Length: 276
Ligand SMILES: [Zn+2]
Image 1 (cartoon, rainbow, N blue to C red):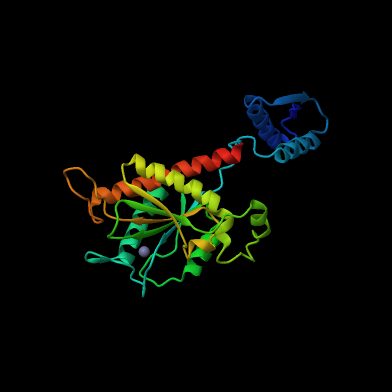
Image 2: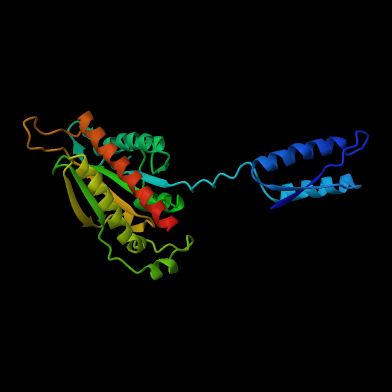
């Protein structure tokens, strides 16, 4: 872009103050590498307004930082709640455990710049459809549904058992007003499997045993985003220290950190895909 600077200087000129402003502007433009052409004009005001117009129309010169990436939104779904207590875990109900874990994971994710939407923040009863509605409304890039169990070992990682459908089908059903309820996840199963792969490697990296599975997931089956359900079970390691219970703070931290690391990886993969 070329710029025009009117260098006519007359102290009595009614355009003197605006000329001063323009001189400062033109100086600033030169320092940012812009071309500024000097002209001598009898009509200072005309050129002053023309230059100001050009300056305004050219958009922000001094704030050319790239526009921020759209917020990467993660939905955390603390399973059970209210009338649905879930499994009995020692002295605690599963619904309380999943809520506490959701709160913990949320703060880890927020510290890493994620937008986090939770399906519940208190001990409330939520229907699966309502959980899906929250995730779909949030336009989430990932959802983790949180469960806990006394049986088994490590983390059980589940993806919907719906058969995948083609993306063309996805486009046809993508209209938010008409979600393919109960089977919406079918269009996302392949993405959910990729997401599960990322979660699996993060947990394995943190030496948490993982069991993978596919099953019907009432809330997730209606979700239109990559989604997994995880069920945290005690860690039954073979070392001399014995199993780490569900309430073991070190074990909880390891699982939560690994999930946060998985989401960081998932986000960077999504950004690479977008930039290609
Ligand atoms: Zn459960």
